[in-house]
Structure formats: structure tokens, C-alpha cells
Image (tube, helix red, strand yellow):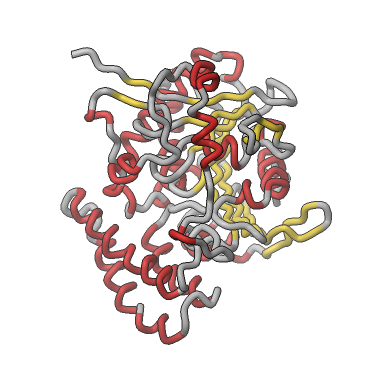
Length: 390
């Protein structure tokens, strides 16, 4: 049987210099296309209402050569004719991404020696650590092209569900989404989630799916009690529970001229593919923080950042898992001062750093920081790669 398989990506050379770092951006979902951040967040272009492109003054391609890849298989324009290629865990995803990077650097050897950074948001809290570990493994085993990995950046990510789900009610109470009485009434749900999550992986994938279902009752209850606040940005409330309008992206991707230029033929484009999301549910509640200490000890930088108004992967849960992570610099990180992140002399966030680890809470932003605070996110990534985000 002949199997068709294709991993689709967008690549933009740096507007500055070819020797700038190479960044790969991994979009979350799971199952949301790389076209989403490309056109709505940190890519070189935005789509106008008349479906033309305009330059993004804060595109990360101004300081890097940047890749947006549609992954896992089934996301965006990536596809396979074999159902066995549907991914359900970090191993399948990270192996696919490692193979992709090997093919990319063999096709574009002029970038192979550049500094390399893994970035992304949301479910990239899983993808990023898994790929970083896979790259380091490949380098050590001399499996192919050596990838010059320098850092991993996770924006509003889901990395350690055990800690992050426990933080939901704390964040909701702090932000007045629920009352003190609601908080007490939900303590039983939090305990049930913790118990279910401890069993995740103990007896195959079913226990992790059960943990996903049990633990998400906490999140769903908070959304209900908040009166339907938008989980990606609690400053918003909108009909149907989703405040973002991606119709321009869908319409643009359906233009014949665009499809011809991309070489995708009649293949259907979905901003986010629910089938990919469902396929990754067994992976959802797994703890990806456990592999990060080894990455830090290898001298790889880690930036964890989060917009302060995101509920679903909120800054509090992220700060808690970062602080709880056991590594050689843990005590010094905990005792490090919290400092102001300034952009044009104005406080744009609060940060905490020690050695290769930085946590940044970004002001006036929700789940998608580069969309809500484009200049601040551009300054953040630029300084971080230059070693100046301290």
C-alpha cells in the first residue's frame, strides 16, 4: 500500500541577517495550525480585512529565521493517509519534529550552525520540553545533523498539570471569578483531580483520559461560575464562549492564489482540527516538567512567560510549577528577587531569574501574549536570546 505523508511548514528568513538564530514555533491546541501565530501573533505579516498582507512591525523574523510547522499530523496542511500516523503522546510528536528538523537542516545547511530556539504556547508546554529532550538525545547519540539548541521558551503553557490544575481555584479566587464560598465548595473537585492524576499512566492510557475528564470539571465549573468569562482572556465575555474571530485566516487560506502558492491543492484547511485534539487527550495530564531539570543542567536556557489575564494556562499555575521544580539552582531561583520588565521605560511585566531559568508575568495580556502585547513580546524574545533578560 502506498502511504502519503506530509508535514507542512512556513519558513521566513530573518529581515536582519541570515546568521540570526533559528526559531521553531510550536502552536498549541493541540491541533491548531502554525498559520494562526504566523498571521495573528509574531509572524512577519497580518491579514487585513480585504485579505491582503501587511507587515508586522513586531514580527519575530526581525531578529530570527523562524519556522511555523503544522503538527501533530492532521494539523493545518500536514496529513497522512495512514491512521497509524495520528499522534497520541509526546514520543510520537517529538520524534516527528526531530525528523522534520533533520530534514530541514539537510535541505538548508546554511542554517545548521545557527543558534536554535524552541518556542511556542499553550500545549507547547508539552511539545517544547519533549522536543528539547529529543534534540539533546539526538545530538549526544550523533543521530544526524547536530542542532545547536540554546533555549526553550514556553508561553502560557500546560507543562505540569498536577500543579497547574490545583492552581485553578487559587487564580480564580484571586481574580474574583469565584467567591470564597465557591472556592471551599470546589475543594472536593480539586482533591478528586489530584487523586485521578496520580493514577495517570499507572494502567495504560485509560487512566490518563479519566484524569483529563475528572480534572477538567474544575476548569468548566470556574467558567460557569464566572458568568461565562473567556478562558483565554478573562477581561472578555462573548457569545458562544469564544472571542477570537479567525474568519480572515480561513478566507485567506481558501484563496486559489494562496493555495497555488503553497502547493496544497484542494486540501481542507482548519484553523484547529478537533480530531488532533481528541487524539492527544491521553497525553494531556502527563507531567512534562520532569524532563526539564536535565535540560537546564545541560546549560539550555528556559523562559516561561504568561499573560496575567489567561485562565486556562494561567500565570499562577505556571509560576508554581517553575518554583517547585527540583534542579541545582532551585533554592537560588526561589530566593532571587522579582524585578520589573520594562519596555520603553514602562513596566510591562514582572520577572524572576536565576542562571538559565526565567519566569515572566506579562501585564495586560491573555493567553496569546504576542497578539495582546506585540512590542513587549518582541522585546522579551530579543533580550532573552541575547542573554539580556535578567
